[in-house]
Length: 279
Ligand SMILES: Cc1ncc(COP(=O)(O)O)c(C=O)c1O
Image (cartoon, rainbow, N blue to C red; front, side, top):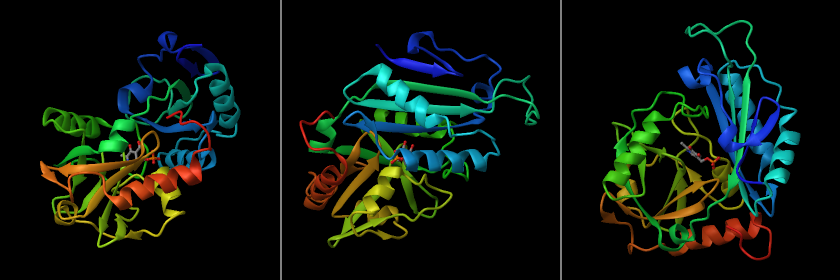
């Protein structure tokens, strides 16, 4: 089966999947989402992703029973039959005449897609370049909202500058996160990451990593970032990605450092099933 979608109870090919124009997810980004990956064909950290989804739903007062999702995800992964898959799951408020007020009677829309995971071993091997950009996002980045325009524009600004991604920095110099991942730095052998707040998404990869290695959760400034011995990002599909250059300045030796390499190995050792790498 090629790339697959599930929309409100129906499986179909991704190319066939549509939502109505008056879906509030389309019109207002009145919608939250999750992205999961599989290891060995099994969704990774499913409980944690569903728990975060429930937190996002509660934060936007969207009443949606999530009990059915486990079965739908399992069936979607089974039908798609990719060696390793990325599962995108989005719940919108539903379809209603366009008005800001949240409609009283509306059926939420569930959209799920399954695509093949495209690994990027070259990023893990050689690292990526990032730029810093002003954090002009809204004040609830802890909600996994589909309102990602600021992230899209920041990511594109990075691409236009010849970099891979952008890291959001507050006006006072506080480093928050990248457009799609959490930030870690290494300073004098110590791992540091910004604490959870409304300014960052609490990454599942971040949580999983914190459970297996000592990390200090503390404010990081742009100066700390630029002066760090090592920098890396964490996110579901890319796991641990070394950052070797920030704003054109090499980090450490300009190549992935030993703590970052060990962190990726540790992550794999704990969470990736043994056997041939499938991304
Ligand atoms: C803004 C942002 N921060 C952090 C993350 C990392 O989250 P996770 O580890 O759950 O993939 C993501 C993932 O997409 C993200 O979009």
